[in-house]
Length: 499
Image (cartoon, rainbow, N blue to C red):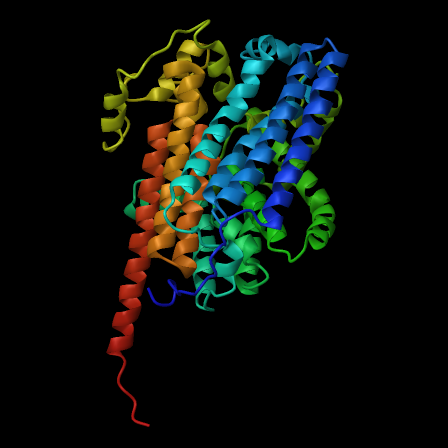
């Protein structure tokens, strides 16, 4: 993989504390003190349960920010652990905003009353998985026999060959073709199945495309074109995740790639209306889907744009007439970012539902090697959520991340244990990628860990997340090996020139 796996020489990080590390720890301490003071000050100033829990959620976001800074110093250049902490922080902020915008009636819906009754334990549910990551990162740094290498994404990106732009264009086309792979007319075909698997494997690749947008402008234009078409399709089909899920990481990657914080703030404020518009569009698509249902892409041939605009206008008028005590599309949109079982199960265990222990762990482990869906509590851990008042069956499901998985087995100790195991797996996966690969292959493999840390571990159990990461990583490696074999064979087949 000489082109994709282009190697470069990197400087080693000297041992000991540098001025930059001392500054990062100082900034982390200041942020922690400021957020804690503001949050707990507001807690003592009000007796409203929703605002008390919102203060604890805001404190959790601040603590997670500090953990992210510390992990970035302990494991310089590692991406997956930071995405793991970032996913937890997004959930904390979303919980705070949800509590601030939800009408009073919605506060009585399951599982919010349980969360309001125990804010400290809810705070622990948000923070403990990331704290497990911090412990593992510290142990990795202490017991490492060699000095960590400073190989950031920026170092690798500057040395990428021009041919890697075609890889980014191909990933954009694969991402867009996922719109059609789920259609009933194509879903049974092998090509559609492979497309769905590849699209799932490349979940976080839009972040990389955004980060490389200034270097590879043609691929950035292709990605933006697929996003524009996806936004149009989302209005007619009622599907939000297929377009909004990759678009947000693309914009975040673009902002991070900017050369200075001043430039990032300038562009960030300029893009703020775009983020707000995307939120409104996503909320509109989701709320309207509740009224009209989900449609397939192939049904667009019978769609009428005028009817759709009229229906949207009538729906918005209906939303404006709602009172403050009714749930609107705006507050229902922000609640989609909260994985409620990951908060409720740690709070409800063991006071309301007893520990399930580790007796069925072997059954769950063996089920990861089976194709297809296997019914039964021992084989489908998401069914455990039914014991906590959630609805999980063949037609619907809920998020059941590592926090919910660990808490249902052993309470907060299980959350810490699962957080440490998840952190060790993410660090090991990226360490393997760093050891064996470089250049584009390393970046694609690193994006697998970022996807698992940010998405899978907040939505599925520990073993399911580990299986998803391992299979996606292996698929990326095999695809790159196949490409390299094809390229070498094509070069050997060319006739030699005499000059």
